[in-house]
Amino acid sequence: MRIELSPVGFWARFVSDSSEFVGQFRAATGGAEVCVDAWRPFPAGGCVREVRFVQPIRSRMSPVRRTRVLETERCCWLPRARADGSDGGAGQGGDGDGGDGGDGDGDGGCCGATLVLQFSQVFADTPYGDYFTVEHKWVVTSVGTDDAMLGAQPPPCLLYTSPSPRD
Figure (cartoon, rainbow, N blue to C red):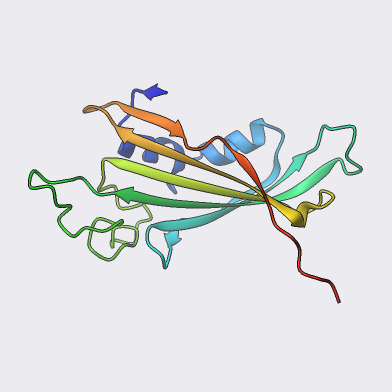
């Protein structure tokens, strides 16, 4: 999907710490008790935050009518390539440390031509909710000065995990 925002503009409008979009979106889709944490550096590079909310369940097959949801969001910027083909040693954070850009403002570094967002959701109160997570990834790639392409790669999927034996 082509959007009329650069990856940096997308970051600022939809996912930065100063954006209220995530909380408003969750509330508009029926979520309650929405709590969006600030971005913090992620040891493997980029940054991470947690979003917690309570979501209604509309399925008649479910014995519960609402569930607590924990969504972990990870973000990294892929560095711009230089004319010589190198990335300038910038790593994922843009300043060589692989963090959020090094300035501590939680802006994800805003250094690259591509923004990668990964989402992982766990549903605490649904039956067998500890058996699976929902995973998806968005890639926002610059295609011009003020344009970008937003793609979901792959489409959201369920990952089954076998729970550990209970004592």
